[in-house]
Length: 268
Image (cartoon, rainbow, N blue to C red; front, side, top):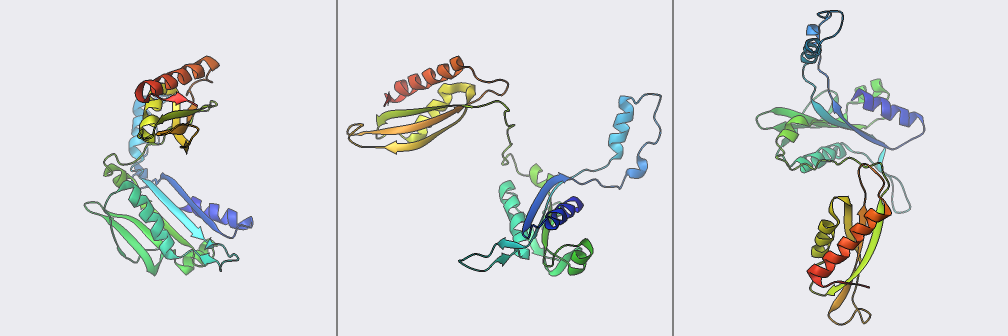
């Protein structure tokens, strides 16, 4: 949370009036720091020395925290500004909980450094307190040099992730190599679902296909009665290299062949 406070103050010092920042990181507890080895077994550090250092670090739980200050909605021709309220901090926590889909109990609470009466605590059955959200206490804000009515939240992630039962989506690494695009306009029967065509195109393209989506649907005299045209965009990319024209052509050929075979599709 301390790094977030510093980041907010830097933004405010540079003229920002409405700031909302969050971070995900590990909290390092000092409960076992007295056990950190001060000497090692020899002139060089051994694997056993490294293991002893790791063991002495104690728990390093992952947490997500955020601070919001200023206006949630800026003033405009259609109305006045809407400042961040303590309920916005609660809403941020609820958004994280909605992703994990773990049932957590919430109740009004008094926790430093939050404002009494504008603070909520979150409890996980069998674990205990997992988060706090609300408006920070005026004295705390004065000490930290933050604007009045600044709100914040902090939530422990490890127990929520452990109980999410695979519901979380794992982020895939972004490939540094350029992508290639191909557009297809397939004429198919009206009864052919767009999703079915997308599935066939994706499978035919293989591992080089990163994304497939329908971006236009047309039905009219130009495609014939009982027919429709589905315009499909195919994005291709390799994780370790730039695709060659020959590789792109092979994907294109495979996609056209699969659409023809499965749906009797014809290119416009």
